[in-house]
Image 1 (cartoon, rainbow, N blue to C red):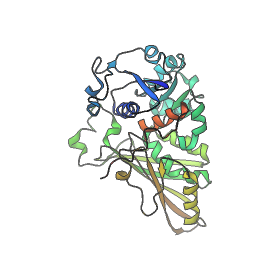
Image 2 (cartoon, helix red, strand yellow):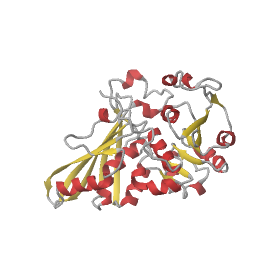
Image 3 (cartoon, rainbow, N blue to C red):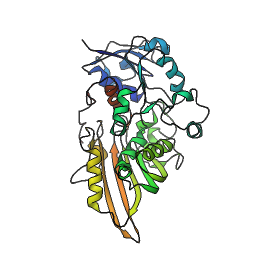
Image 4 (cartoon, rainbow, N blue to C red):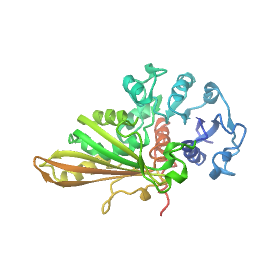
Length: 349
């Protein structure tokens, strides 16, 4: 018999599809309820055709209290601003929470209001939320009542720059361009994600003002970055899944390739889901469909007193950038092996 019970609130989106898929094969966690305002009364396969025949569960329209009743953990696949109205009600149930929205990622309420628009519904809960990046906050996640799972762009960019931050080499201006797949825009079709304008196109959106900017800066500053000024341009690409991020930082001319290689090795030694490829650079096809991330770097020539470091990272935006990372945190919260149901390498090509 499985030891823990879980429910999902907001179960019809792409992220929820990945959570459901992982929980249905989880040896220790039973998925008991899936709440949604869409497909109510229909089986899960109505929204997620890959689950045809895999579960008798149906989408239910439930209050947060009913969705959380008797659960050990509740995973939220709700939009920003909506999740924040649900969390206080779920907390009262005693269940642990893993929230995939951006509502509890920031400690600074003013940054939240600037980048997400409007007042935060429950700012008193921000201080107690734990940023759910296991590679940085593993022990805190284990103790958390509320885990704020990182954004997809934030995950990829932070993982690429974290080795520099941890050894004190990340300082000053950093420029990042990150290319993302269409599934990151969610299940609801929009003009910018419509297939005919996406399939053979590259376009930027929210340049220099994307909502993941403050969580990246806040997290890297906490990891050792100094006087960080991050400039980030996101690009939508003709991919369904994947993010490829390139970040440019500047280090002292005396910094060597060997120093940087050791920083990457030491940062990710023993990490189950972050790889530093030995003989190639990261690429999306190597991680698509999996919870793995790939990171690496290139060091430029000396230019006066500085050298440029290009940090590369690749993830699947729905898994390591979303649902898979949420399940990884759920495993930690429940005292389980964080790798459970997440070790499959994805397909190739």
